[in-house]
Length: 494
Image (cartoon, rainbow, N blue to C red; front, side):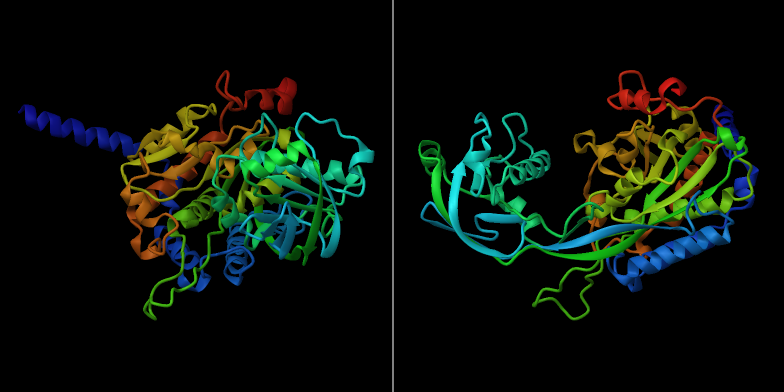
């Protein structure tokens, strides 16, 4: 009898759980169509959806047409669904720098980051962190300094500081800037990234290439010590110049107006990046039929379909706040599409009250959804309710050592103060199951558990609905590192 009672209790609890799922979602869910969409977007024909390649442009057109079919509108002020993101492909030139009886060559001990073609013999001057900048000592010379500052010791921050130095030394009349690399990150890692073609955002006010050369160099401790003793030295510099090529790509954007009066409109942004990493070169000893396509079914085909399924199922449901549907380009290149949107948003940022992002490396637990920032963004109740409605539990901020919250497009919103968690397929750590598919050729549509994928997509769509209906706007947890930015963005409305 006790066993029967337990079974009945479990059965009733499951019935009650399923009852939490709204009928409008269940009755309008088209699981076959959503599987078809994932199989198309992550097909071999899309060639890994790399920025600058036809497969990504085809994917963008498909997403836009699905937005149109579902009655979504272009964002205010936009003519269509496409926001052009002006990428440029950077090809490093070939330098030869003769300095301190050493020949510095690209990749080996110099990495050129900017500059036009030139051939010159001149004078270099070493300037340490503590030296005062004097124009007469810099004008017409090549400046040698240490990478970063005494406080800045990370490569990314040091490179940003280097651009500031480049502009300052250019203003003072220098011919070029070479920074001596002294950070703990191995030179080989930096070289692997910088000594190849790469994509970056092109700024409207940016010239094709700076008049002064800018690069990183490797010197040994003895050479640096000699420079400190005798800071003025001869230098020979020959360079073929940095090559830049414009590569257009697109964020795909649409929205569904909310029921609030026009002058009170607020927005919830649903987002997913739709780019991936393309195709790798085939090794000479690999068989002819070796798979070299990174299909990106999990990363981030599942996220894109979460967006498209939400557009489909929410199209006829009245919602208080307007909902923006955003498919980002360039996430794999450094969150560049979302970065461009934030800097060029057709919507005032202080009217965007929430960003629900979806991204992931894969899943290793089909009983859960992993949510990055779950208990930080003021919508934990709504997100948990949405997951529970489809029999899924929430894992909060898995693999904390990876700092995953700050590694997807949501962080571009968070940096502005907008609460922005990321839904991710279920995992608790970067285990073997995740590594088996993450940025691997194995991440193809045939390897997806579509029963779980549909539950994931339903939870995402329902969470989006619940958040749009919240009485009060979501707020960061007290003391969160992004709370101050929120107060600055929203002012008295926070």
